[in-house]
Length: 178
Ligand code: PRP
Ligand code: ADE
Image 1 (tube, rainbow, N blue to C red):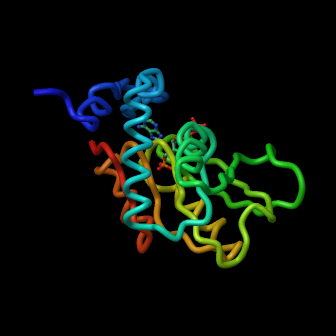
Image 2: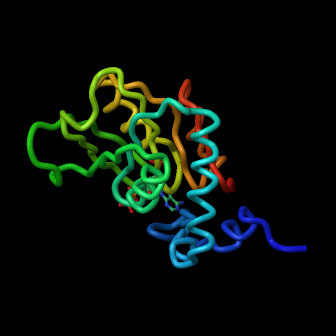
């Protein structure tokens, strides 16, 4: 019997213990990007989910940096635009910012003020959910712009860190969980 799409994606994600610091198991998605069937499968699964669950989506919002690898591919499939949430200091023009903590540090996230408008319906996308600090910050930015977060999409979810609880009442759709 052949390997399913989800089995292929799961097989390609590699664990690196003690990266970037001791006690962290880093889940490396690079081999998924390198395998065209696996990357297409990721986007297929996200597309199916969004079409079924969030058919009224207006925009895909991706998180710096690894959310940028999947977000534009998904946005193109859905026929909607893509918006970047960037780390501080990278975007020109009027911006809104929010600070946050993540599994192995702290950072500040920004969007351009005109990137998302009041009432727009967005899905947020990133490669991985750990503590949820990063996606929570992105939700805060959407709230500041009065946009409507339909849900969050990630390739990998680290269950033990309860990131999905932190994001409530927003939903999290993940492909692979550890
Ligand atoms: C990683 C990952 C998520 C975030 C998850 O990004 O890509 O964005 O951490 O952690 P959290 O759920 O605890 O917030 P990182 O900040 O390392 O940046 P990068 O994408 O630029 O490598
Ligand atoms: N971002 C935050 N925690 C991570 C982990 N354990 N692996 C990969 N990316 C991460």
